[in-house]
Image (cartoon, rainbow, N blue to C red; front, side):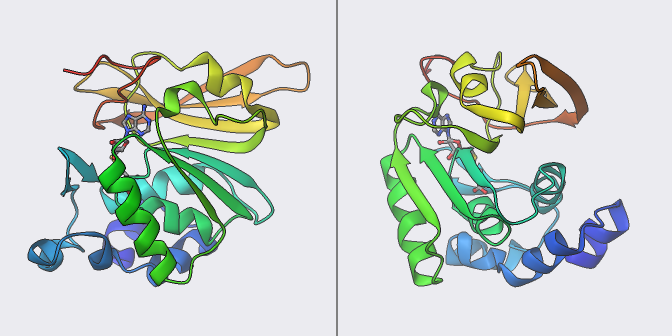
Length: 206
Ligand code: SAH
C-alpha cells in the first residue's frame, strides 16, 4: 500500500511513510472488510461514515508538515486511523467525533495499540475544542460548506488548518495558514470527496 499508493503518487515525507507503514489499516475496519483494508479506497466504518482512502490520509498528513512538537486538533475521529497516524507524528492529538459509538470504539482501539498521546471528545467539532486553547495544526476529515470561524479562532500564529470545503458531493482541500498579523493565507491543494461535516457550523443533519 505504502509503495504503490503513496510513494508512487508523490508522497515523500519519510516520517509520514514510516508511520503509515506501522499503523495497520486492517485493525481499523470490521473483520469482514479486513481483506480490503489495503485497497485504494475509502471503506465503511458504520453510522454511514467511512475510513478515508490511504492516499488522502497521507496527503493530508504530509500537508500538515509535522515535525513532532505540535498539538493537533482533529475533527472527525471516525475509525481512529488518521488519529493514530497523527499521534505518531506530533506531541498530542485532540480529537472530536459526533457519533458516540465511533468515538468509543476509536478510543478503545488506540488504547489497545498503546497510543496514549490522544485526548478524545464526543460532540460537535464545528464549534471547536470546548476549552479555550490554540492548536498548531487543525485537521478536519469531513467536508464543510464553509470553514467554521471557531476553528480559525483556535489556530495559533503560523498554524495550519486543513479542511475540505465546498458542496456535499465534492470539495476543495483547503489549507489556511495564520500569518503573524493574524490574517489568513489560503491555498487550494486539490479536489476531494468527504462525508459531510454535520453540526451547528456545518451541514444540517438530514
Ligand atoms: N479520519 C477518519 C475519517 C472519518 S469520516 C478515519 O480515518 O476513519 C469523518 C468523520 O467525521 C465521521 O466519523 C463523522 O461522524 C465525523 N463528523 C462529521 N461531522 C462532525 C462534527 N461536526 N464533529 C465531529 N465529528 C464529525
